[in-house]
Length: 395
Ligand code: SAH
Ligand code: SF4
Image 1: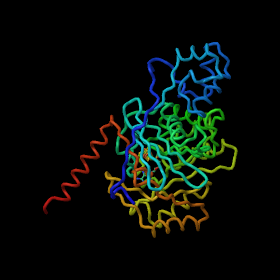
Image 2: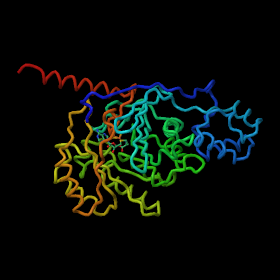
Image 3: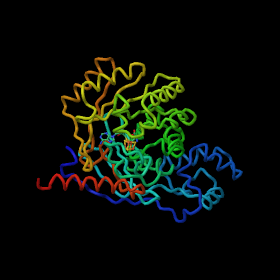
Image 4: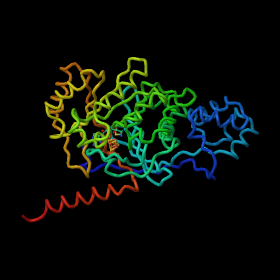
């Protein structure tokens, strides 16, 4: 099913924990273990309090400081006077026919961003957003077409994992670890919101919080090279690289950031990060396959040569259509041909199955509601209107 069909959208409003007075108070929900330790130390308290508070918030889903019963009443009172626990608000909740969920959260800037949960046998993957919109404007991406409004805070990023656990019964033991994998593949470019994303990643992998394996937390990037170069000093999460083209001429057309950081520079930077990990992990190369644009056999052959010295897995994502794009998804024959050429060249290749497109939650369909500060979305809409009117005009 594609977005062209009528989706079954059943919004379900959800009550959320709302702070009484959040102004100027520290938000404990947005602090990593290291930050929280500093917080307690700065107030003359024992740093081990940090792990206790993390467990309450991120393992038991508690947002009321007074409910943290292994902390003395006097310290709880001090904390309550000085801090809050604020998570983003869930404003809509959609469930797909295939069991996936899309939740829309409202963030402090007023924008709405989306997260998607995809259950599979033996694992549950949460696709997390890092920004309201995106500045990078890749030609095939619905988020990019929305323009950009704001970076998400740590609490707004980790709050997506918190909410997924809450909704799926992860805090009350209904389901044990409903989210086993996180991919930073929702709205936005995670490496352009660097510090908050790094803090949120550390909470995802922290034993006193969500305790996810570094193999199961993946940053997806379109190639912000300076950020990849410094990544090793902040995290050891896995990485996926949105390549989408086998040469600079084509990549610069569809992924504009390539003009600044071309392919050779990007692959070199990723190699550096992989070398810092000291294990056998390899990056995933993401390749959104668009009919007539980057799906020729010659593109596959060129890609095989390009990546010959670059250990990786390749993930083909057949283009998911959306209303502002004229691109088409390739036929299943061209997807198979593309995959086979790469497999014959010795690569491990997967083709991402389209999930949750009945609720507009497949890769690249995430749009939320972004008050665009870049005016890009209105330019795209105006251009589409011109194309539509000239197509309909008498000749
Ligand atoms: N900004 C990051 C992460 C978010 S996009 C990045 O670009 O990697 C996550 C993935 O979805 C990327 O690989 C992106 O190329 C892919 N994607 C975007 N639009 C798509 C579409 N319409 N169809 C299929 N995949 C898409
Ligand atoms: Fe931004 Fe990624 Fe979309 Fe490109 S594909 S516009 S980097 S969210």
